[in-house]
Image 1 (cartoon, helix red, strand yellow):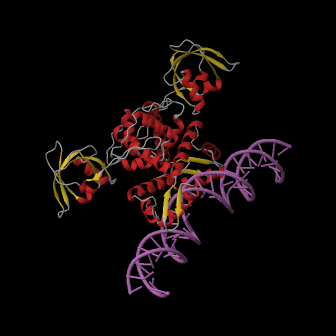
Image 2 (cartoon, chains in turn blue, purple, red, brown):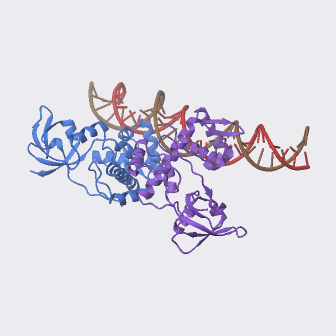
Image 3 (cartoon, protein in one colour):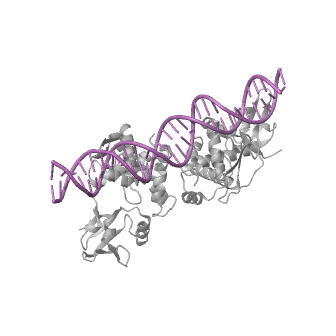
Length: 223
Length: 223
DNA sequence: GCCGCTATTTTGTTTGATCAAAATCGAATT
DNA sequence: AATTCGATTTTGATCAAACAAAATAGCGGC
């Protein structure tokens, strides 16, 4: 059984690779994602390579093997199922669940996870709107675009909120910026670096900086 | 924050002390309860003493300080709340929850535990019939006797099943020997070392060896 | 082609938890 | 009192994960 640290490294490599579009992730980024000094990452990765979980090329970077990727995807599944559970069943606050899930995903056995999955009715997306991989490790992708790139007058539905920062999530929640929310871009002001939104069924429009808008992924509902 | 190993030592000392009625627990018993070699226990306990969680007298044994006891009781609370949750909410099997709870009790944050407690409606006893300490660390004691000591013809209600062994719990469950079950001792045969029981609202009587009967604690319902 | 910057790797330590085996203490038996 | 046995304590080693700081490799600029 991999330790929780190993699981985190694999998950982080997977996420970073997805983010950058590259299969191979340089050591520096691994270290940064894991919040450790570079030397620590090198040592760990050499260990993972010895166990066949990653392929490691010195001075180039690291990529997941089949086996490593399977574990990474399972970790994502755990994380998201747990988030879903904390919000939907226990009624926890959207902004406080990430760190809890981060912890719990390593502690919960497959058995308990199966029961939770069944109890929840096998959900397919978590409260952030991220897809929950199936037990066999597959998931459907969606074509999403960032809110920051959407033009004036376009109607969209929030699909995901990328940020994990509790502060931002609290703000998003109180403003109603959650997955599923439908809205329209009223005004787009590039020089002021902000967007004005009108949330469906609410009257006060919201103004959002581009930095924040970038973190919100949407699907178009009308063009 | 104490590590999970520290928490386990404290819990085990508390439980062993309760069991034996002595405040002070000899090292050998600590080692046995923790399933480590005696030397390991000595080293750990010296560490706990340095942190003010236990009082340690070499060659005599160890006892909990105020602070150590508080932590031990909180661990019991966590353990039992989690067991309750696994059985009542997720519908897990009575025989498989102990080891899960053993694990989870160290992983779940106070915050999540509070939510679980509220979700469950603040229960006061776990599925084994053990009292769940309140958040402030108190609990009511009951006067229980072992089934092995009850005379013929007496009606009793199961209050607790002491064993944690999955095999035994499975047997107990399929036989209907669970907390709350009412029954009567039909026959008591000291030389055959067994008891014959009649469970209320069932017709086939059950025969139980004294070893097993000892693990079942009951309250009298008639005398 | 050499210089120096940055990213990476090496090396040496630390901490927590464990084991194995050797040393030692205490009490019961002779 | 001396002996012996069982329970404890000490000692020395290991393992995983981390850090700090020194060593090094690779690449762009001159």
